[in-house]
Image: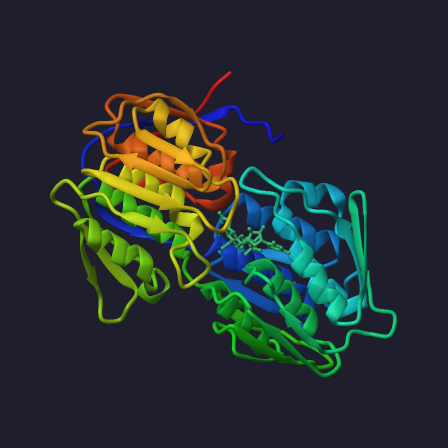
Length: 426
Ligand code: EPZ
């Protein structure tokens, strides 16, 4: 387990006010970094978020022979012309299961790849059957023994039709990348439609790939012989944006979020209006104002693949619900174990009852500060939000989860008026 002698200390401090700029999307930067393995000329990536997970993915690329250098805090220059391995180091896969999306690009470059089975994680088993189903459909033989996975296409990858039983984001990305240099046409049916899929598709097209339909359920990829280089700016992080919007609502604040694409967070905007927030969108679509001047009302959410309510905002929305007036309901349909934040919120006085993948919340007047633990990335963010409105001090441990997905969380919240600090503990 990562060493973790730091905690976040949050004190309830009234409404948030001010402006916050959202960083590039973690869940776009990671697959696009993996896709850089396909390019044989210089690639410049802009708006790369400063996150632990990005650092790990850069280590993976370097371990495979890519040259990676920071041009500035959020700009990378990458060249993968001379890759020297098709095997992802096992210890790096252990550090971050999302590195599994390097399999597709390596298969495309070498017609073979090997890595460690990405285990499950706190929120679920995280199977990879759909990824392997896609590789097999592209004429690769996949072999999975205890903890090793390899895929080999002896006579090259060949385009085919792949139906995804679930619109898996990672499987869609892995198959898309493998298909960019397969012979012929690949069609992915029931593909994921997340904005991060569209961003990846735009990036691959700029490298010379021939892709149509990203953002719909059917994506078609015509294989090409070679991919080159480009410059690409990562889309804003819709989950980070949602987190700050909900924090503003929860504290009855008034904040402006910069670098956000409103069309990527329609469910969040709709639900915030439903509970009583005032949302102002700018005409040029990249700034949103969130205001709440009275106690909000409870509502219900059900997580679904995009464009449904995002599972990555479920924990944060539940935190908001714990102080809304009346009853709220949450149904989590994407992951099988994504309620670990419930016990931690209950330590702070929240009233939540869960039954399977459903939770019922009765709003309380006040939460109280407590010692709590971040159990996963988004649960950690939910606890920070709860600390913003709780009476007294909230001490959050295991914050390495939070650092995986939220860059500069202390300075961003402090600039909005929050009393939050990171301290070292024995
Ligand atoms: C991506 O994970 C995101 N991670 C997750 O964000 C996000 O929660 C998830 O998509 C859903 O939106 C990154 O992009 C790095 P999936 P991914 O494959 O690709 C089942 C965060 O907080 N499934 O769409 O792993 C699986 O069990 C993280 O930023 C299969 O059954 O998600 C799950 O129930 C957490 N077989 C569902 O699909 C497979 O082969 C969604 O998984 C693959 C997935």
